[in-house]
Image (cartoon, rainbow, N blue to C red):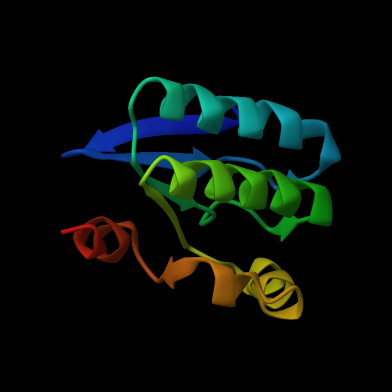
Length: 112
């Protein structure tokens, strides 16, 4: 299973269980987030702690999902960056676009 969903209170946590999050998985990931939004989710945390690499296409899916979520009055927050993922987030300045946290608990708590 590439993506694992878990509810913590009213927050949906989506774990990215891929060594490499790339073009091949980007559309399925975006559809998962869109489906969650269509089902009323407004607080989503995406957990990258199991992911070693993220490409620009996957980041693009994340950005369009964030845009749609903010238009719906919600937010998407990110956690668990391994070194290469952290580098990509900083290189693309995604760490300025998204609220980023060290742990799932910190991200969930930030919605309060």
